Image 1 (cartoon, rainbow, N blue to C red):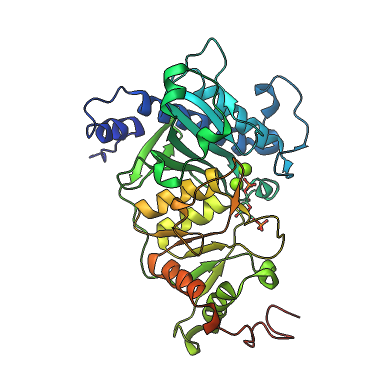
Image 2 (cartoon, rainbow, N blue to C red; image 1 turned 30 degrees about the horizontal axis):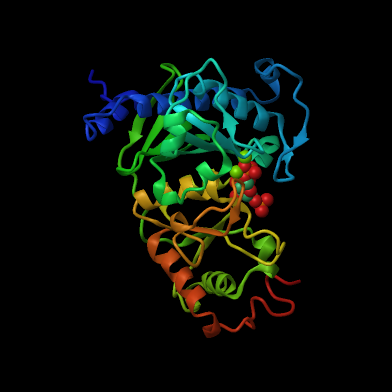
Length: 364
Ligand SMILES: O=P(O)(O)OC[C@H]1O[C@](O)(COP(=O)(O)O)[C@@H](O)[C@@H]1O
Ligand SMILES: [Mg+2]
Ligand SMILES: [Mg+2]
């Protein structure tokens, strides 16, 4: 009987670092700590109501509200604690930032500080926990500013405000029927499946590429009345199907876990949109730039797709605050380029299509 030889995540990372003969090993060690946090979160998520998930944190974790004004689930808080506790001790990090923490997180003494910044959404799609639908964790690694590395000073918000092009690594873990880790270290995208018997992430999806041809789009259509004209035009044309300008039928999906939508698009193509809309003029979008849009954007671009605000590549957007929101469109390159084109030529589309008119599909 022959067994199929598979790389573990550790072996994959060692292979990747051969490109950097002078590497200290810190980067790989940090990624392995992140992977460990994800395994711990996977266990907590899988136990659901049965799990004694509170035992990990010191105090009773009540449902609270985070800096975004969103309700924190217990598992949001617990997942955040797994990330900080598994990664703070190794001496690799200068600091962290998370969806669930208002301010940058300082590495506590006696742990040493290192040269990287870790930014993460510990649990994405957590509103889906109650209904047992796939959720995930999203993370991004940046280099800390040199003066912070040299002096060991506390990190401040400005240290994290780097465009997505500066990311050294990005990835997500997916807690679904299987637990997966999907990762880029700037040299393509690789997917690993957690082998529950070995407790190891095994390389199962080397060199992931976003399929170019697509007939699938994802958007929360309940926001359609707030969409800007270019998005209305794009969706309208998809809905018109084979008798419309696209000349083919499209399928629509909405999981409401962006991480799961990103995974679907990496596996079988498509386009995801959470665009800037007019719902709340104070918000430039729904998703957060530093720990949702940028890491997913890097993965998608490394896999040959495209990630955009609708107007410009999202990785080029200059962050202004830690928890900044942004419009996000990503997926198969030609579709995202089409949406960008529609933003450049808004006058070409009149918002009086039958699909958006009175008593239309989206307006009862
Ligand atoms: O409530 P909506 O409009 O469906 O939005 C869902 C979006 O919100 C998110 O759940 C936000 O992430 P969090 O769960 O980390 O707050 C995305 O994953 C998802 O795309
Ligand atoms: Mg999220
Ligand atoms: Mg979250």
